[in-house]
Length: 144
Image 1 (tube, one colour):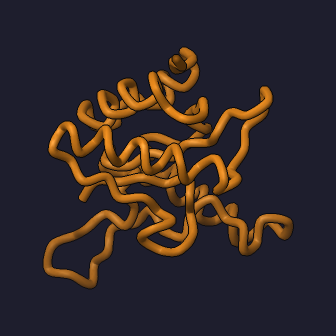
Image 2 (cartoon, rainbow, N blue to C red):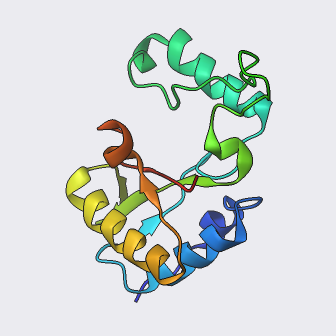
């Protein structure tokens, strides 16, 4: 049985309470241990912009940016919409914790993802996984 470190729990500040409940229940019987990376929970507009820019201006991070979404609201719509669900508290990222190291390998993330989706359904929540949504971003989860 696994549990979150205090660091991972701190990184969930301002994330939707139902997602925190799903995560806390999900980690208990997860097929692999996992944690929440830095910036894996709620993000402010400013932080989202910093992460977006970092992935485009740092040579070693090009095509490996942390996010593909700007932090600014989309003004092209009648109502403004936030471009990242992290800015609403309705998204989180994870990493698998295998052999005392963080891993983003799908062979670990996919079983965790499927487990978390099952736990979410127990709460009547459809948890979307980034890998299913976009064919990449196996660390990302969100509710709409």
